[in-house]
Length: 237
Image 1 (tube, rainbow, N blue to C red):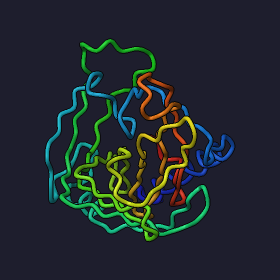
Image 2: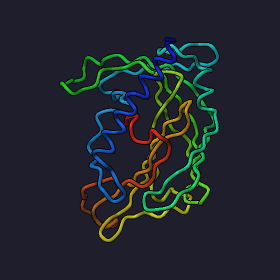
Image 3: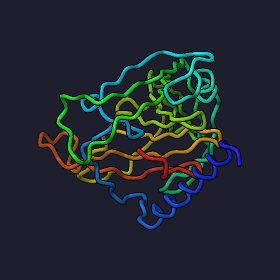
Image 4: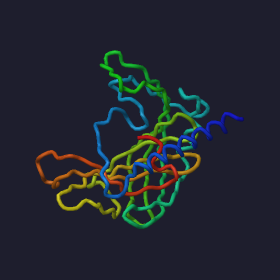
């Protein structure tokens, strides 16, 4: 069995198991997802306080720390992605993603000996990083977003994933929040997986349980809003 086939089988075996776990737990529109202080960046990469991250720009046949070349990851990022999107309050549309101004980095991650580590501190992991400008739109006009920079973490040439928050006042499309009453819609959390098998991901509304002009800091929760792709919820983040 080839290494590539073995990798695919392992990937989808894990995806199936995690997908079943997600279905058992269930996250539906209007059901809150608790937001805890993040201990690591998107993709499980430890924060720079725990790890020293050294980025090196790569291109062409130059390999990253995970063995894939700059050209392979550039090709992954430069693909035009499109996928059917399901709004969890009802309705469907087509989502389109395009990346531009793409840079690929090889990242060496070494332990910061001055950081006070504890048992749950993730290990430092070498990885590749794709940084690019993001265009994200839907055919129904609810999303028409253009962001100057997003980062995707990659461990191979098959997929890369990342996330970004778009503040309420920065949204360009006609998106309407589900926040009601004494709730304040603060931002839209976009989780993305670009992969050789297509585009996957979710949208979540970051909502404060209090009026937007309330000077008191209130609890924050996330409400599921949309999903796309077969692996929408089982790739980490």
